[in-house]
Length: 433
Ligand SMILES: *Cc1c(COP(=O)(O)O)cnc(C)c1O
Image 1: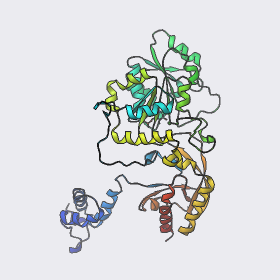
Image 2 (image 1 turned 60 degrees about the vertical axis):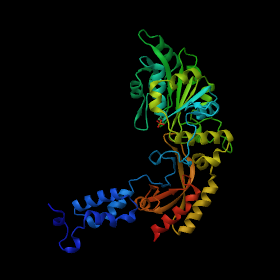
Image 3 (image 1 turned 135 degrees about the horizontal axis):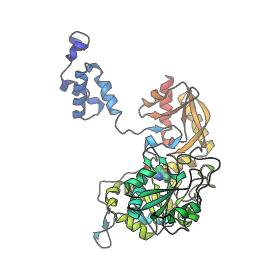
Image 4 (image 1 turned 30 degrees about the vertical axis):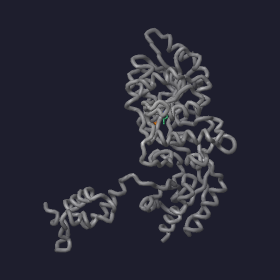
């Protein structure tokens, strides 16, 4: 029953007091109240000799910067798009109008920039794209129906399930067409079916999977001929299909990604998308389109609960300004990774191998990730070492996250910031040592 009865007998293993043990762990850098909890539990478990390991294990549960060498550029478990942002502890004009000195709109600063970027009349920012869809449906279709193709009634990212989002918004889903083929006539029939009260047609990009073969969907251009507003949930946040911010033509892997500018010019009344996927910004959701509809969303009760804080808005404003200034491949980490030429990746891999004294360069396929462009990859280069070294690499400080392939561990350099190459070198050298 007592802690000591489980540990080896003798004075050396008699547990210290909780306070003494907690103080002995101060080198972990954890705050004292946390160390007291860890010390108390270790003593209760008869495990006080491993208290330092317990403290280290706790430290590793805190948010920690890592090196993403998985080759998945927008890694969902690693916070999607990596974002650089810092700001001083100063008040900012989150809801203050400098012209009048009175209260202003939280949506104005960044909303106007996204309206400009999307070629839309207006835009607002909410917590994420799930919130954007929830708000649009609640504001425009509460108590009424939303028509969605059966081929687009999808689940994205584990928790975003279209039918459930509709239900939570207080709207009812009307299934249109079939899983593989939905034509304009199917929507037209659903709208006039007796008893139906369709307020909205929603086109949802099935971001994370593809149906191949005998497949047909109805493009926004055709949906725009219907009598109700058309909302396009494009998901990934690609702003413009012509990617004018990249050097060279649009990459092949972007071929099937819907983009905001084109959806709006094709006649979508609203578009919604995530800010932390292909846009490359912080977690947020954008609603852009017709001013009257955007205003109905902004003034809905739910908007208050779904809004972003000043930190997010300030980071997103930087992202929007980078697109407008065409400095995307300098400023936005995701597009910087995409823009790396293959021979530059090869040179980096060779240098890492040379300095670490271990590993071999291998061809890899990097992925955009975050459910964007499923099944499509971009050529990349990795450093391969024998065996499964994933756990040892995660134990490195800072942790390195890789992946395994054919009995090898591969560290893809495309998803690694070149400033972190020295971390790969140190982690690989430590494996060899
Ligand atoms: C990712 C995605 C969502 C969910 O967006 P979050 O920003 O993760 O809330 C919704 N719809 C589509 C089409 C998506 O791709």
